Image 1 (cartoon, rainbow, N blue to C red):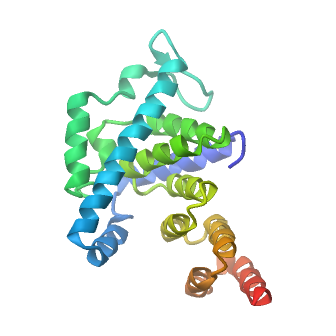
Image 2 (image 1 turned 120 degrees about the vertical axis):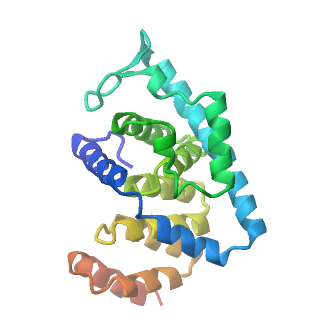
Image 3 (image 1 turned 90 degrees about the vertical axis):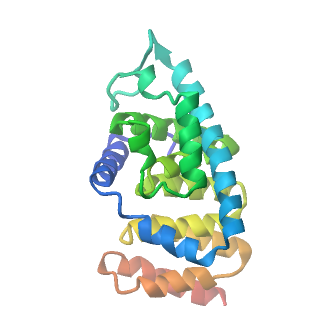
Length: 238
């Protein structure tokens, strides 16, 4: 990630959030595919791990929001309108409700940003702070923060990309590959997560996942040149 978010970065994330808030269908099929392959026990274990990271991520972000607020108003970025601290807060009662939604895997039917009454401005602020955690090399906290964001809104490419980068920095290459693939599903014409796939594949010395995804999207004219170059690169490594 760049050390500083640009106005264009925030505008792109904002547009994605607005589109997501108009239609929450994007990740539903991906979630269904995952559920179909997983056992009930694995699903429970995954839900538990997700909730633990969700709560940890929220707490880390809340502390940052609180530390940067003045007179009960968060106004750290020129790109994000001044926002009351109360708009970021999740009460203990609400957190308990969110826990039930996560454990029952109902977050596709009831998007958590709606449950939390979060505005686009609040999510942008959380995204900016999550990126700062990453840039400050606080990768464990950044991972939890991005898990919080991807759980709150599953349709934002930048949230998944941030999470994948965190896993990669923590050398959890298999998990990074999984999350980069989710980012690709959301925005197939954005080649950035493909670069992540290639880096992780090189680290584990296994390009099978990279080849699978490059072949799958090789007819996408918007990224055809990058795909062709990547296939040639993999061929040169054999």
